[in-house]
Image (cartoon, rainbow, N blue to C red; front, side, top):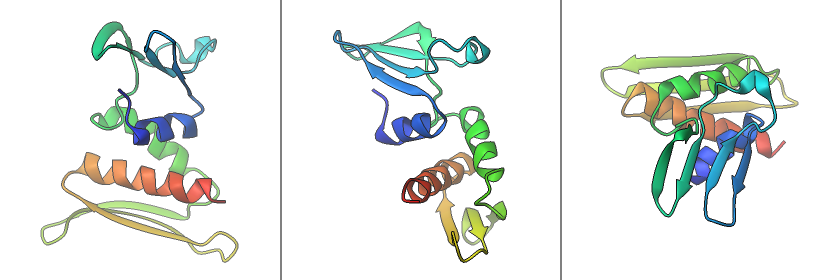
Length: 130
């Protein structure tokens, strides 16, 4: 099953999340051939069918990179940094100096993927409150 975070990211990216009556889940852009290479997953009764896959945001940094790029190039972000410190581990920060839409998000994680995933979720939560 897709997590709530994955559903949130999918919606932010313009994807559609669908649950069919048979219990199958789809996350993807339907009817858009330009995004046909985005993998989709179909779940049915806990079984995964490999002919469909969805972006595995919670486990794949490759799936998160387009999301990170969308955030990084948005008009609300002045600076996005991802760093590693031997004391704190991986950290990621987004800042925006303008008073109209102030933002300062800072997250710490165990790995680069973990910190990017957390930052993406924090940003989407902030963005959805605009």
